[in-house]
Length: 114
Image (cartoon, rainbow, N blue to C red; front, side):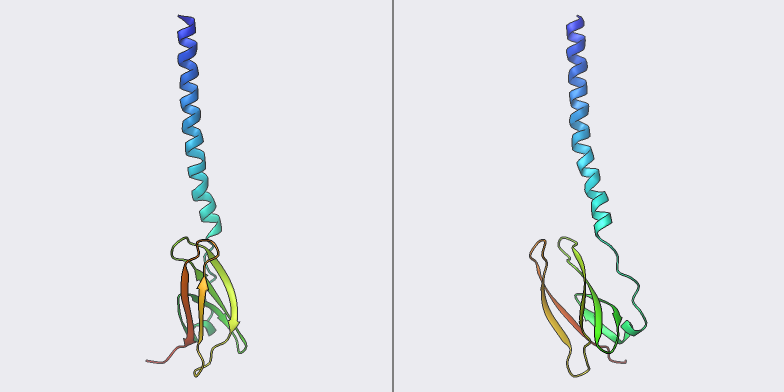
């Protein structure tokens, strides 16, 4: 009888351990994903002069513009500095996500009034 009790207790502990081993990695995925996908800094007033497709303009000056790119498939994010686009020369780039390999077209141009 004592042996049956101990075996039952051992089986219960094993199933609890299995449950915890399944639960902990799952919860850590959400924590790590929340830490890694940092939100962009609020765009400055200078960034409002530009319209971006596939990215968000964070800051801009006469020479350089900082953009934030997020992969829609896996959530990978990056900040990149580009040459500031002009009215006659918009910035275009084919960006490839280093994590999942998805390609995305990035376009930054001067916003038109109206």
